[in-house]
Length: 367
Image (tube, rainbow, N blue to C red):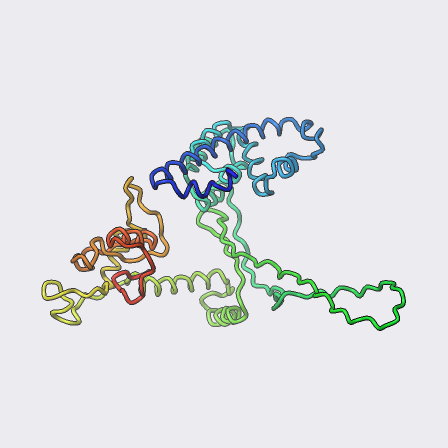
């Protein structure tokens, strides 16, 4: 019953105690993981021990005895072997500077000559940054461009009709009642292929995804039209041009970006000009452009401990002083804020619970 009541107990904790408890539990989990890796490294050096228990590999022992998933077992086994070669990794794991996944990705590229420099660069890095580091340590050649047709997925789950069964029954004086046939089992559709964005070498990436027939036909038309500019019809070069054009268009619409910004002008003199009336809540393009450049396309909210929100998606332009509280015009007080922190600030400034904001309120313009 203790485990079933944990959610109730955690829900009743005050905010400060909840955050402190989570931090303590995370540190405890890291300590347990480090201790487990050290023991797995010792067990890995004694193959006869788990072999005597009927397990042909350490992987089988981890999945059957420790009840780890296949991915968790692989991560921990590779990390344990790296720790046996470079014990300093255990300390980095305990402090949270490295994760088990990071150690697994770097294991094959660590040498007695470079492990200190590589581990120092890997501290606190994200998975994407670790992939880039691995690509720098072991660059791979560019993947060849290819366009090929895949088998079309079934429109609906496939029904499998079971073969008829014949059973021997005793003769009955009356005709038997008709029996409803059992429903045929359904085969699940094949799993969807996930897009791939993989770092292959410094400043080089492999991108792989699946498109429909219309997109394929558009690509073929572009290859034909751009034959002089791109003689080999490389889809990668066309993709680069398309992304550049789309990015310029989206940034111009959402961020007010422009190569040569036009001079600002007043549309309604006396209404939207500072000093001659109340400025409109609509955020001008030059303000959005300036706020985006100043905030580095990142949420500008800073927590009580001085930590800046790292979000770069679902950003909104937000008043530093709420407009309803006679805040200054958007031209001087707008900044980029993530949607979650916007809801939190709206709740604290209005005294009401945060909820969805109608689209007609334009002094929070979404990116």
